[in-house]
Image (spheres, rainbow, N blue to C red):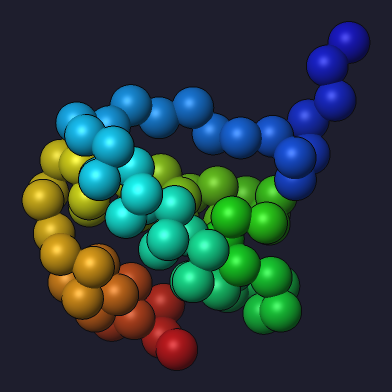
Length: 79
């Protein structure tokens, strides 16, 4: 049996190593709205999983800049 938890890493594909690095930097910086002292990378809350998926989509599919990703999430979830 596999243990699912905060140590679980979401498996996403990226168009380039630079894109993956941006994604990792963003989820390390951005805070989980549910557990304010935890970043998205370290939270296993469902909202954090959703937000990691969203950040991945915004970076890889939508082609947003880091600033645009921050603005999008801030508009939707607040500070």
